[in-house]
Amino acid sequence: MAEAEKYTFTAVMTFLVKLEERLAEFYSRLASEVDSQELAELLSNFAEKNREWRDTLDRVRRETVLEMTLEPIMGLQLKRFEDEINSIIDSSLGPVEKAVQLEQKLQELYKKASAKVLHSSADASIVLDRLVRECRKRREKLSKFM
Image (cartoon, rainbow, N blue to C red; front, side, top):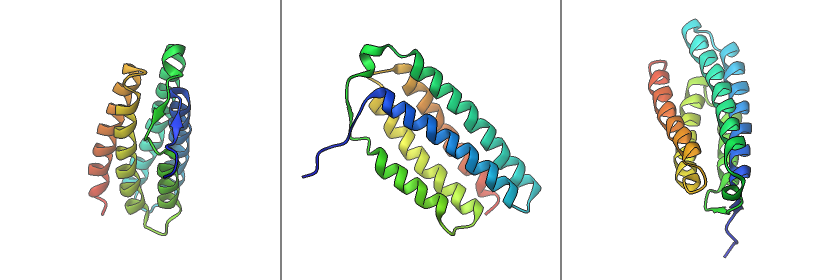
């Protein structure tokens, strides 16, 4: 049996901060590739919001008490999520389908991460719960372009 992946709180939050930056770049690029002005504006707004979330996650990471951040977080499978997210981004799906699948995967990641970091930082868990709701709202907004 393979050894379970272990992460510190800081490693988890750093991963999520970098992911939000990558998502902002992805949505900015996608906005420039679509024909619909309405969809382009929506995707540009997503990119802007991802940058805001990146800053929020980074702030929470920096403000969390150090002692709690050293306790290992297990069972999060960040590598699997990273691989699946990369696969979606690099897929040949259309822009809307990519975005919908990406938001579904992100919702799953943020929900799992929220539960895992709760013991280290209630603030981080609350922020991640907000991201779960945001992903659901984004999928609803995107669905009208399918």
